[in-house]
Length: 131
Image (cartoon, rainbow, N blue to C red; front, side, top):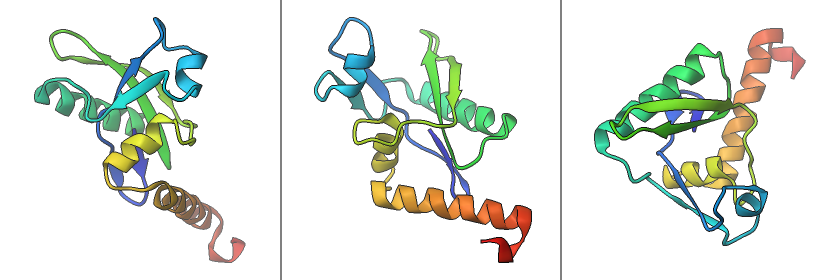
């Protein structure tokens, strides 16, 4: 995941391990059906490349606030971006809050940063008296 609150911050890599054969709705939203390993169990060079790819995707697509950048890393350590989700889940079982927590950002602080960033962007667009 990537945060732009206020500076761009790439969150730690996260690996999903599903107890189901497929990472499906049940695995995502039923406690105990999957768990997250942070940082992901990949080589350091692959972790750096994945973080750089996430930051680049966030910037090139003009994302703001937050985004979850889903990718796979092949056997050679090359990351492949699959999806950039600009409205990621923010539940207790969601990926982005878990990665933020691993970076030392508790859920309340994450929400505060996101709201402050949105208000700041709005003020920049319409002026200080609009908020």
